[in-house]
Every structure is written in C-alpha cells, then in structure tokens.
Length: 441
Image (cartoon, rainbow, N blue to C red; front, side, top):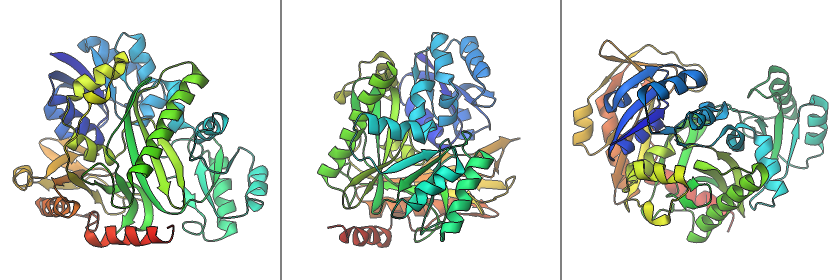
C-alpha cells in the first residue's frame, strides 16, 4: 500500500483525496484549514501554509511518503514539487520553472508566440504604465486586462464588461502595476475574445498527453452569468466528453494546443512537464486559448474526478515515471453538474466564521457527491471562511438529471449568509449558451 502526500485543503483536493482513496494508498495531507472531508481520509494531517516549502518537505520526510500530489497552483509556483523531488519523493505536479505556465501570463503568451502554438491571441506585456497605456490606445479594439501573476482567478477585467470606460481601464492598469497585483508588477493586455468558454484538462507525464472530458465553468457570482467574477460558482460536463456547444473537431483542436504547449515547455526549459495541464479556451469564430493552469481546475476537478473510473494512484505514479498511456485513464460516460455553496459576498468581501450544518447522509442518499472546500472544522463543528464552502456534484445520464440531483442536495446544507447559483446546468442556461453560439456560425 503506497503512502501518498496530498498538498492542499480545498474542494479540488477533497476530490483528489477521494479519488486517491479509491486506489490502494494511505494518505497524508498538508493543508492550511482543517477540511473535514480530507481529514477523514487521511492518516495524518499537518495544518500549515501549503506554500511553506520546508514544512511540506519536512512532513514528507517524517511520514516516509513514497509519492506526492499537489493540488493548488501557489505551492507549485514557489517550488514545492522541486523540494519534494529533491527529497526523493516523486511528485504529480510540475516543477517551479514549468509552473510559470500559470504563474506568469507573460511567460505563457511569449511561449505560445515563440513556438507558434495555435489558438494564440494578440497581446502586449508591460511593467511601465505609460507604455501600457500607449499600447492600449493603439490596440484597435476592446481588450482584456490581466495581472501577470497569480490572482486566484479573480484578476482579469474586460473592457466593455467590467471596465466601462477608457479611464476605468487606465486606472486598473495603474493599479496592477503600482500595487503589484499578482505579485509581479506587470500587466498583460490581450484582445477580448467572444464566444463560450470551456476547459480541457489533461494528464501529462512529460511526453504523453491524456485529455479528460470537457467542462464549462461559471465564474460570475449570480444567476444568468451576471455579477463579479469569482474563482468559480460551479460547472458541468456532458455525456460523451464534449459539451452541447462544442464539436469533436473543437475538442481535438484544444487537445492539440495542449500537446504543442507541452512540447514547447520541454524545448524552452529542457525539463519535462509532469502533472495536470489545464487549458481554458474560448470558442467563437475560431478557437482561442484564454489561459493555462498548472493544476486541476476548481471546480472542474470535481466533475472529472467524480467520473474517473481508473486508479488515480496508478495514474499519478505513471505520470511521475513518464509511462502514462491513454489506456490508463478511463471515465464514466455520464454527465455531471457541480454547484458551489458559498458565503454571501464571496469574491468581493465575504465574512467567515458562520456555522454550517451539513446532512451528509441525506446528500448521499440523493445520489450526490459532497466535497468540502475552504471550511474549517473545530470542535466537531464546521465553520465557513471567506471563500467557497462546499461543492455538490450530481452525476447522471443527462445534464438535466445531474442538475436535479445537485440542486436537490443543496437543501441539506444549512447556514446563515450562504447561497448558490441555482441555474448552473439547467436547460435554460444551456439554451442561452447555444443561442450565443449562433452568432459565430
């Protein structure tokens, strides 16, 4: 029985933990808050910042783990995988140099341009405010403004959507550069892409790329896809691994972009990318790459890992060995809908510390799967934090049926000042997506 270290304590990591425990392993976890779902699955838990490289490494050495899987991007971006590999612990998660594919949007865009990776966009990167504004004023269209570094999925603002005037756009550029949003003090200005976004995640062993079912995430806070951006309010996937608005050709093009990016990373750095590579795409008149992430998506991890039929422990092992094949990864041919329950104000200023009452048995009896997120378990009670609280996943033959399961399960979560988006996965929302795509035909 292999001893596995898991780094991270959110719903994504709860989904990873559950998938690992379906295999033959003993689990040891480092997380900053006590996630009750992960704690129950773990032999031992270290409560510590996941970015504390020395504490993670020390815990791995003390517990004698034989393999590691890193969930969030932040520990990867500061070199947790490097430290674990140096300690002799093979790690499912890229080294720091390779994690720049997410940690630096400038690095990602420059890499795509240098190696002629398809689905690229027009862009410019700047650390000087005057140069950035001069580029923007000559851009010739609406743009997306992004901090260069990590912002937890909340740093992107789009002209005509979040930024209503040129003055607001200039001010946001100034804020990014002068306040160091994203930790790098740089700004990336890109063409605004229209259409429908979707995600393709892939297992990567350095050479081989094995894609997972496509997922659509919903970042807007409120029903109807309105309101501020969040880290994600929920997501859905469809039977057959596609989505109602994408074709097999669209999906294959997205996978080709991922494969060419893996090859470009190896050519650029001389190192092999081993872990999860997540591509966020926009499908309009043509396919465009919005961003890459160096880990599972959150919430998209809950969709694909709930569907995973294969042994996740073996997948991780083969990723670290560079021996992964397409036949090692199979998924149930079903649809999924994931809905997050979050504190009121999530994404702009929510307060934590509220008690959550969760009827886990009732949720399971409905056929839904529960994943705890950024909650804290103290003295046998579950408390909210300022971030997402828990995710509920329905799985069925159709999106509509999966949505009914997920939505029904929300009735068994009680607490003050919490809410969820009821429309994710509904027929009405998907029909709106299909109608939106008609303009690009």
